[in-house]
Amino acid sequence: MSRVLEGLEPQKVFYYFEELSRIPRPSYHEKAISDYLADFAKERGLEYYQDDLYNIIIIKEATAGYEDAAPVIFQGHMDMVCEKEAGCKKDMEKEGVDLAAEGDFVFAKGTTLGGDDGIALAMGLAILDSDHLPHPRLEAVFTVSEEVGMEGASGIDVSMLRGRRLLNLDSEEEGVFLAGCAGGAVATVTLPKNTRPRKEESVFRISAEGLRGGHSGTEIHKGRVNANILMARLLSEVYKKTPFSLIRVSGGAKDNAIAREAEALLACDRPSEIFSLLQQTAAALIKEYRPLEQEISLTAERWDGSLPEEILTRETTEAYLKLLCDMPHGVIAMCKGQDDLVETSLNLGVVTDQKEDVCLSYCVRSSVDRAFDELIGTMKETAERCGASVSVRGRYPAWEFAEVSPLRQMMLDVYREMFQKEAVVNVMHAGVECGQLAQKLPGMDAVSFGPDLFDIHTPKERMSISSVQRTYAFLLELLKRAR
Ligand SMILES: [Zn+2]
Image 1 (tube, rainbow, N blue to C red):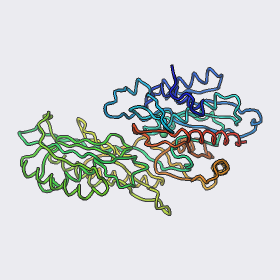
Image 2 (image 1 turned 90 degrees about the vertical axis):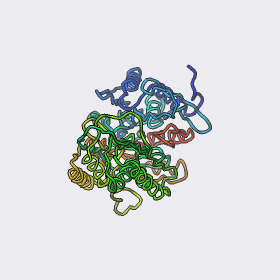
Image 3 (image 1 turned 45 degrees about the vertical axis):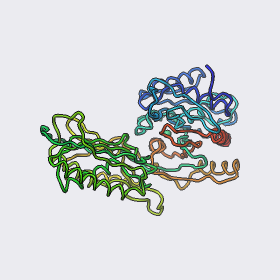
């Protein structure tokens, strides 16, 4: 089979990147990639551990002269976010991606690339495969299901690891070293539905579209409008003047993405009154938000498509709208003493209408455990007032910034020497797996870094070839110096 990335340097890194790209690897479908990694270790006689979740740990002993050096843990995740362009027919559960290279970029045709975090695996394999690169005992940890709540890192047994220096390769900006992140969880708010039979009523479909969306960790403070909240504001203002019954509601695609679209169907007795109220209110909201969202669209139209026999009662409709409007959302607090970093936030990612209830899925984040607990408390009180309940799952710990970090210091020094400039040390509001690993291995000294990747989690994802070259050279130099 001919290779698309043939000739790109570092050759071995791009060789493995291409190998990995042929294996489909959405979250929760990591068996194939995990088995590939296990076979890789087996063929080279490397000690390895594969668990029931398909996490893999591969150990490579120290090279000559490094026998007494403290081990280094090298880490990345196997799964990738699978997003496609409209019209792309690929079944990403069954097929690998179609790589392409142009100028300084590698990307995939029509889909996400999986540079996040395939490049970590590729660099890891290139080093594990080598017989000439100097390094201390290397403990490569490849996790599953990072993109869906870091379940792999949360379930992995790391008792065989001897290292306390962790290089996590899951950051996307060259020259930025990540040294801390917020913790979080998914909180699901469930509102039981009371329904009544549908009568001869007029039905409208309302849709919110054209919003920018974004990542609920890194972009929650950027004033992006959440489609679910926008829809709730529109409906609730209209409802206060002329009540109606909701038929169904939905919006958003992922807990950790700011919802870009939402839809609602409502039934009413006074259609012309409702229609003009919907239009007036929508126009006012569009005017209010247009400075933040140029493409915002909020429309109401008569609906004559299929409809369920049962629709929500007025009481449930009212409870639902009150719930969404009263529930806190967006940024709750900024970090004390660091006014450009979010401390606590929540994002109403997904609204789903189920048979018995309406489910609101919130991604909740905080770098302060107490603030997290307080926010969950507020959510519970708000939910109870509306007859709903809250359950929390997938809680992961914050990765606390360490004032003293010999690993980070060494990285800053090596970076300055190699590139004649300073790297930036950052903490962020989104989660990385260092938090879980640090919790399991007390005394861990961790840094996350990586080459430039752009537009990750979208079909426009692309990876800079020259940045991969520099980052790999930097990584090799770190291992060489890690005596
Ligand atoms: Zn990632």
